[in-house]
Length: 368
Image 1 (cartoon, one colour):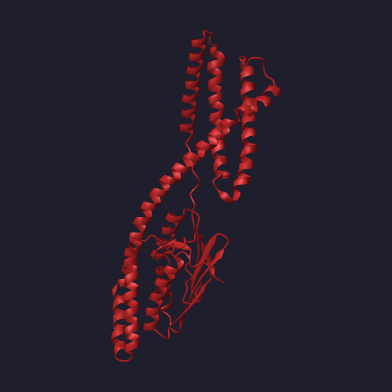
Image 2 (cartoon, helix red, strand yellow):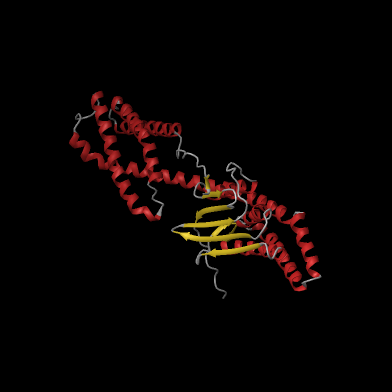
């Protein structure tokens, strides 16, 4: 039985706008409305009833200040920018707009009536009939919530783009360090030298594979995202080199479902995982090492699996550098919208499961 180790921490959601900022905004708005009403009464030559004017506007700001976080929370929970649930969320907001406005009018009329400054006194019928005239405030707040959300997403996108660029460089350096360190490069060249005396064609083939592999790694230095097909091509080249070195000790199987090759994923994501499986999972054991790479689509998710039949481990708390770097890159690219799971047990190898959002690359335009 494999030990399963899911690990994908998600930070608690932050409010769109901090409470003190909301309170200050409504206080300033209330003050502006008081000055506006005073100026209108002054220009019309009518006296200003300060109890109704000042108290009413401050109470108005206080009540909507308390309801604003509720509107912002509903904006996040029932996101109108999500195409699949837009109609359902729109109906929810339509009901919420009237319900919250009715709550506001009931509280406002009740408190103003208790204070004795509500013209005509409290009337439930009048409150219900006039509630519709205040519904636009809900939609105004909803638009503000999405404006703030869009600005925050844009800012986070810029930050994530900078982080992705930095992490891509780090990943490339790490990949180059792993791929070009003496044990790999020198062993490959030594294998070529040995093959020259027994199988010249195999030696030439291995040199061509090594050259193409290094060229792809270096040529992709400015690429942040690639298709699954491109990542698999690089991975195949690496594994073909290893199979040329050890023709009877490494068996590789690919199970790539049709339609998944166009899926987009971070560059240099899969190849280091495969290399780690070969170096640490398969190389130390005797006999034939088996490696299986699979990819399939499930609804709007891309599911990738890398499995070996190596030694495995009982120490489920061990986290290698490669695995930590992998999760860090995925968290930067996808936030919490990803999943990583590792299954391992002594004598049963490792199985790495990745779940990513499925995003297909746009088809290349036809040449004119």
